[in-house]
Image (cartoon, rainbow, N blue to C red; front, side, top):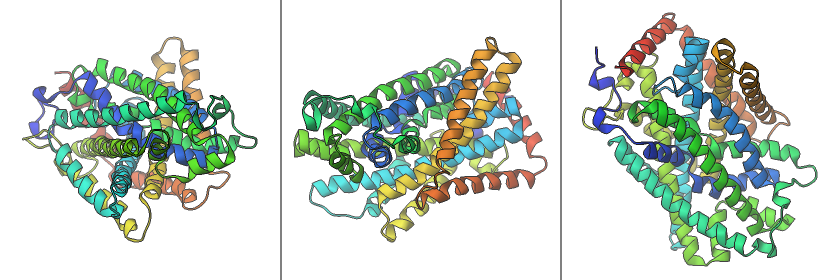
Amino acid sequence: MAQSPSTRLGDKGRKITLIQAIGYSIALRAPTASMALNTSLAASMAGRAVPLVMLGSLVGVILMALPFIKFTRRYVHAGSIYNFNSHVLGSSTGFVSGWVLLLSYLGFAFGGIALIGDFGQALLSQLGLNIPWGPIALVGTGIVYLMITREIKISTTVALTLEGLSVLAMIILSVVIVGRGGAAHHLTALPFVPASGMWKGVAFAMVFGFLSYFGFDVAATIGEETHNPRRNIPIAILANLVLAGILYVFVSYAQTIGFGVTAEGIKTFAGTGAPLGLLADRYVGSAMGVGIDIGAVFSGFAATMAAMQAASRLLFALGRDGVLPQSLGTVSAKSGAPVRSISVVVIVGLMVMLVPSIWGTSAANMFGYVGTVGVLGFLVSYGLTSIADMVNESRTGTNKGLKVGLAILALLIILYTLYANLYPVPPMPYMLFPYLTAAWILAGVILMMQKPTLKDDINRALAAHERQIDL
């Protein structure tokens, strides 16, 4: 029997293309916003070695992405690893995987609200208007809500267009900086060599490197809404990472030499909340600075749209399967979007992000807080997926030694990054975030224990969904 339209994503006429799926993944990562904010945070910990952080993070993330590429060739589900890991490790582990991934997507979605406020405030400041970031984020998030409750083809096209324009401006600025040799007027390899005693800082800064890449898996959440998903989703994941790696290493190198590899230059780099705008003013002129700020606002909008869509679709999947209230597992007959799930994400996000703004907490700090929680959630969920990959390859794979070895290497990178967030103890409030992530996991376990039939319900729902997808 075909699935009821009220609980089925992606009617035949609403499917998106491969290019739109790649754009959706790119939009969630918000390349311009990442390079306008994460690099400064990384510089505060790794010094001049920000490009090395981006390169090292890319290698680690590619290893983490391999299981997703393999699993998405077989499974199509809005719940992403909630589905993958349930098939390999059992529904209990699958549920925990999806539950932690939901925390990550919520962290990114909430961080997107901060991005809109931060870059919107910077842009208006350039125009002589001093407005707190909270009201800007509120209005911007309202616009995002109106967009993502429409057909996904519309919102993904808008997100891709906005992000494409902002990335173009960032590339032009980076080419100018590199062409002039940066602050020292000559190119140097020092950004790829940490200063003495900075290796620990590089390891901790990889959190912000991962933050720039994480979300590569988001394409899996829209598999049900994509043409030929078993082919196009793996391609979207891989293309997303390759393009991001080239862009991030180049732009972060341009930023580092643009400020200069001296102690004073790195201090300025680490202390600014809008490095791209500052560099644009310095190397091109104020008009380019305004253009970069506009691009950053576009990037913030695109990232927020994609992250809220991802979080809402995972909520939708958990509601559809009876894990969470089933009202979350319905879609709009008009647009095909899970409007109720979207509404929950937006309302909770605004409450979490805007209340601290009343106390004077900056948008950049709020982005760092929720982004770190999101990364920790990704590390846990990706770690479970690496374990699922090891188990799956040991059972059925060929070249088992190599494939299991790669999965183990990915898991070791994940465990080391988690360790670096625990010891040495990071400053407040970052020291609290690993325990907040653990509390979220515990809440999921308690939720599962309170419903003894949950495992059987999940297994039945996933089996029924798989039959419907193959019809």
